[in-house]
Length: 487
Image 1: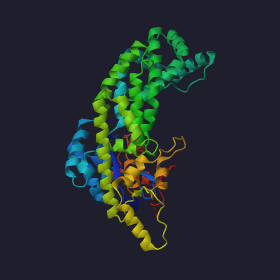
Image 2: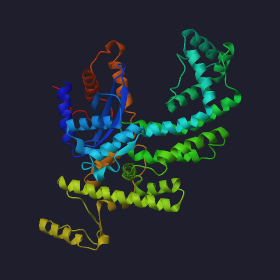
Image 3: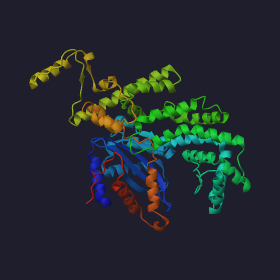
Image 4: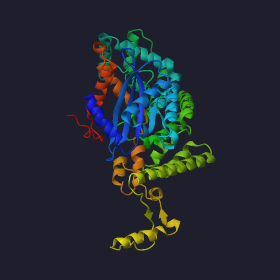
């Protein structure tokens, strides 16, 4: 089954008239073997977004940048899709940096503009690093809460004792309290929220069991941190999604984070000011003007925002007027460059680019084909200010009304005949994944398949099971799996 479905998927990928965005990450099994997973994200001709695990291979140590690059290139070559690579999202480790540099160098002739915008840094990972840097100011207090929760969760008797106190306090009993994973800030946030809710219960439990408990001042800091981190929940959710497009909302979320770090009301507490300063340092390292241009263009392809939001964004995040002008000029130039490149691609594929004619008179309505062609020729000969390219027409058209029910993919699908070139761009740019979080489900599945009772399973069998499960299991959403058929 794996062989048959893989061949069908390979044919589908090779026949695509769009490019493919990739994400890749490493995983270590209970066999102490390293695996590299490669996922393809793409939008088909019907504007359905797909996410497919195309490789789950064992990789020998050391996991150097060269080893990662070779494994990724080998997979793309076997599928015959190396020339279709558009972007790749990786973590921020040094070996990932090296792997991306090597990928760009080896595939420069196949990549658009030599792969200048190939690398997409995992936004969820950056956000986690950013928050973790800030959380160090409350390490001692959080460690105390963490230790108390760990003590409670360690035995059924202690959980029972905790629940007896909770019921007397009028709170719901718990099967176990949320204990965070230190390198995932959102789990720490969940732990804080629950700890604040059960603060009185925890205090009574700690007193009766002679366990250390944070002071009132410590709790004030913890509550302030919880309120502050709530502003980052939406960004985490957006960066972690993989079943619907998120590239066009990257700048929205970066701006929200920037505003939260600059918000004086939110930083009224001294502890939060310290947290904000620590986070701002990491923010400046990764996101202070250092944006992958494909994500900037993806935002421009949102008909609700276009260039206007981009100018608003730069006005908010740039410190100097010259930086705003430079950023806007760069964005316009790259938008034009990509449009011209896709115009060539669309023409090669047999569709002529559409030009919108600004007519000052009555449109040509002659019935005969020759008269229509003459009218079109005459309009094209008019002054340059009466002819707009498809890109100019799109940017000058009225913005689409911002509505909660608005679906950007549906809009581009509806308007593909009006914007031939831009709709082709939208299929590629909106397929960009902002993070490597989609691997969590793959690695979780791998861990369940390769359990302690099946630890002798070969890497080839594991890859077949992981890939087939991903290819055949249908999730509700806009992904159409009907093209992959198994006899």
